[in-house]
Amino acid sequence: MRPTLAARTCLVVGASITIAAVQAAGLEDLPKRKPGLWEMSMVSAEGKQGQMTSRVCIDTATDAALTRFGLGMMNQMCSKRDIRVSGNVATIDMVCKIGESQQTSHSTITYTGNNAYRIDVRAHFEPPFLGKSDSTMTQAARWTGACPADMKPGDLVMGNGMRINLKDMAAAKP
Image (tube, rainbow, N blue to C red; front, top):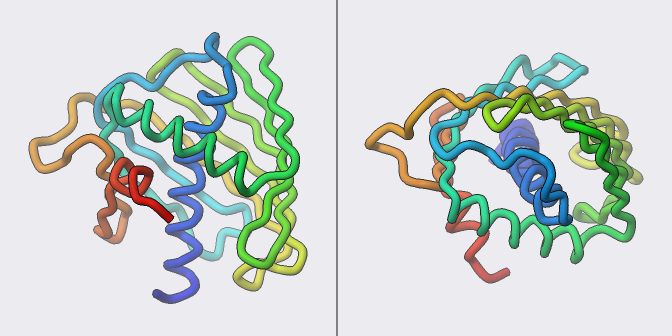
């Protein structure tokens, strides 16, 4: 896998896990994602890779599995997890070990009911991760309707057509 493809995969999967981790942190008052097909557009402030768009099929069981996985990953990789909620906004400050790097991140997730959200993430890596010391990323996600017949819950299809199943990934043992 080329570094840019690896970075894209990490960003998409990371954003999905961030949502699950926030939901796992006991933030019951925040909206849960509506079951069905979600379209996620992600752009890096550095702008070199352009906008990445992906689609994910979610159901209640998949969200629960991703929640357990996100919480487990967060507990395993992160030495600091500060999550605050005010109204429809969750603010997350974390320090996590990603490969050989320490990632310090500040994220804000703004929910619009249960059918849209926006994540803004600023991260610093020491030493640099995949050649980057700092990264800023925004993801906008919106519910688009029922999942198509060719997608099962947990299927994530990236803009380049690469398909992975997040539920299967979460169920796999490391």
